[in-house]
Length: 337
Ligand code: PLP
Image 1: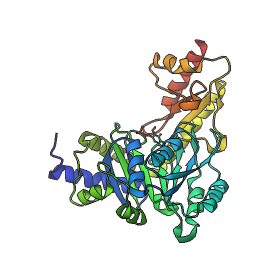
Image 2: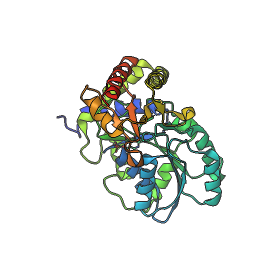
Image 3: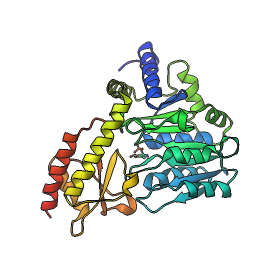
Image 4: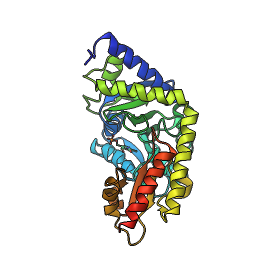
């Protein structure tokens, strides 16, 4: 292991941070925290939201609920804007929620809802927020399963904080949460009264300026993240996005041929995860096990979607041939019952 307070780590941190800024499409500072994506979500809340602050949480699935819950746990007064699972957020409903909550400190949005396979129209939602007086509330975006795989223009769209996690499109093991933070979000971080220690972004920023992290980082994951970023940048961001679009379409088409119906509204179907309704008469809870027996990992539904859907992840290092393997295994799994 290298010394995380020595020159090698300093170089590693500088390289990874610079490449992350390219992929997050931001000129803002990026902080890399040791923790999973949820740690990144918690860091955003505890550094921006004071106990008692009003927050508008746009929730379209389990991860939207999680972000709203974190805000609630830390004492925020949370107004939720929800839709039935499978739908995308309605910009008009967000507009109305902001009319009812003119003093909201932050709007929380999940860009790509991994539990339902829906990608929100973040650009339009961000426009709604930005068109409020004084640039609107802070816009906090859960980009865990989107950044680096599907377009998210942090600065151009006016996102204040965007969070991702190393195990998703970055092709690295879990263990690092990355946050892009705008100058006005930093002002809120400095003024925030919420207690925080491990995820204190003021500490992260102070140490980042010296090429370090405040606490021992997940050094091994940094190396993997550096390799993942090299792959993304070698392929080119636009090519990566195009490949995700192609692979997702291939998955949806192939599943349709097998008799599956898409769970989400097709207009908002995610290009990083495909959620399929379990056909009538098929034991949905048994499908992941039957796939695993063939060497293919898929996920079942989460929360209230348990047993009702299956989820095929296709983000990061994934090509049409991988989807073909999934579809072949799915055909066998369906035949088994
Ligand atoms: N948000 C979204 C959209 C996710 O997909 C996930 C994980 O799948 C998370 C948050 C939570 O991240 P983690 O499991 O790394 O804590």
